[in-house]
Image (cartoon, rainbow, N blue to C red):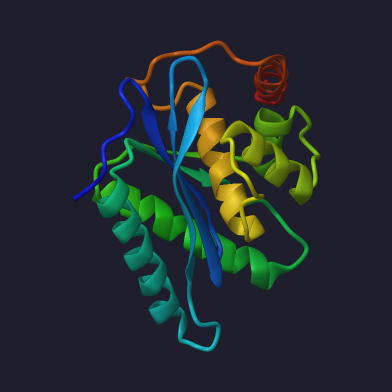
Length: 191
């Protein structure tokens, strides 16, 4: 049975897709933009297993998180071109599984680019992993930095989505200056 979100909060499952380590982070984001940690972890698959088995393990792990924590929306890091084609292929496959599981469960899903997430959480779109971990820990009032980095990234993705208005039924909240700058830049690139 899923735990319930804090009153008036939007529960967001953030997913940092990966074939070996798929980061998952669940946060409750309130209308005043405060957030609280619900769950953080990593779904792992054996690198030596066949691809179909690895993807099934990731799907089962994501379904279990949804069942246990009942998110209202799922946010996934958007896959972008990388120099390592093998790495981007595994990330894309895990991302597809995350979106498929959202669809199976009837949950709205969104994708966010890594720089969008970094800008939302740190105010700087080119922040490094340590800066993201530090800000996630600060926002969620954690005593230690979330580990591994995949888990911290999943929490950052969930925070980014919650702060950007979340699901259509979520309470809207004003964007930070960094988020407004990012949204303006995105609009300009679509022209």
